Amino acid sequence: MVYNNAAMVSGGYPTTGQDWINKIADDGSSWSVMQAGLQLDQPLDIYRLRQAIRRLLEDEPVLSCRFDDSCEPPVWRPLELSDEHWCTLAISRTPDETIRRLITEPLPDSGQSWQVQVIRSPETSMPSTDYLLVRAHHALMDAAGLRDLIILLAERYRLLGDNPSETLPKPGNRSMRPLFAAVGSPDPRRLFRPDLAALHADWGLPGHASPDADNRPDYIRRALDDKQSARWLLAAKTYGVTLTTLLLAGLSQTLEEFLNPDQEAIRIIQVTSNLRRYLPPDQAMIIGNLSGMLPMKLPAGQTAGPDQSACRQAASTPLMPEQLRQLGRQLEDLKKQRADLHSAAMLQLLSCRPYAEVRNMLSAAWQKSCETQHAAPVLSNLGRWPEETMNFGDNKVNQVDFYGPAMHAPALLLAVIGYQGRIGLSVGHFPSERPAGIVEKLIDALIRNIDRQIETT
Image (spheres, rainbow, N blue to C red):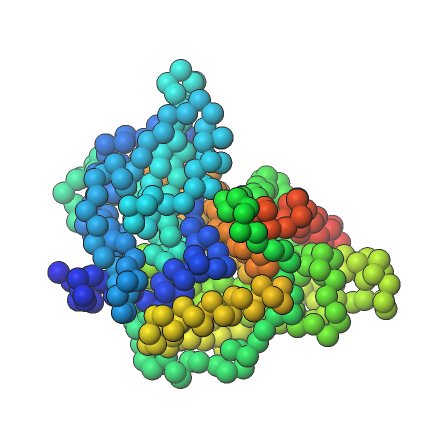
């Protein structure tokens, strides 16, 4: 059997460097489960949905595998599970409570790395609706991969009603080698940048894990309405920057207020980048990990001496348009330098080492972060998810919720998604590690800071 042009090895399929990192993160820095919830306007045909999933498993065999790190190197090992394992149905009179519970649960102990769960209100409810929850381990795919998986699943669901025999395109090669070839650097060592590897943040959202505490994550979501979303998008356009830059400015100000770092502290926010942008469009739909990082080194907040209240007041002052444009130029410069390929190259080089050695290296790095309470926050703008391809026939998707990997303190990941012109923000965290309500206060302050910036336009 052949999987995406890569032959099976050791009875399984090859893993990538990013697969390794995201799997190892389960032992330290993150929950490593990503989830997208789709609110549909009417119930799905469960039998048809399970058939669509089965076709997707056949087209992309790695989806029916578990990550096996008991061998060297690790492989994706095939699983034989029934359709009910891949797609469950829960009838609930309190669907919101059921959703909140399900998103905090680990994936099944069967070893599968993804699952579809349908939460349905009972027929006595008028109208009856479905909430489609797609959950995937980060070792299997990144956020763009999760989006592509949903698009491919919806496509197969639609065709099962129209033309079941039609051949559908398969996902592209999930290896990083085609990426390096596409950018003209087959040897990843040519893309490694020591200057970026040496960057270390001097801040993080502090907190401490307790071995006796409940280790379930919690997710803070804020959904902007149509009017507020339109204001944010218009403001970014007016300033001549992207929404990511506007979010970056707001997050930077908010962290200055909450953390009040030393003037000399190195302030870094990692901005995720979808490396599929380097591939030809017909090869860019990939259910795998193909993400990079753009390290934004931010200037110190404008303070007024040692008075802490003065520092906080200055930090919350709206940025001038030129400051925003400077942030935008820095982000664009990093993209032009292809700085996001550095992280991909680093992970590819790590995967050439023994897995146990990589695990020990990352464990030591995470232990140091816990001791120093420093970890660069991550901003992940997932962009607009396309409603035109994310529909299940007559079942329209009215809303998409995204829940990124929950990060242990001092790490923090802010995920942002756009759907039907509306912007949603979410942060996954572990409540027992930080003071009650601190993450909610941070995300609300972020929204206020961006609104304050817009009001000066």
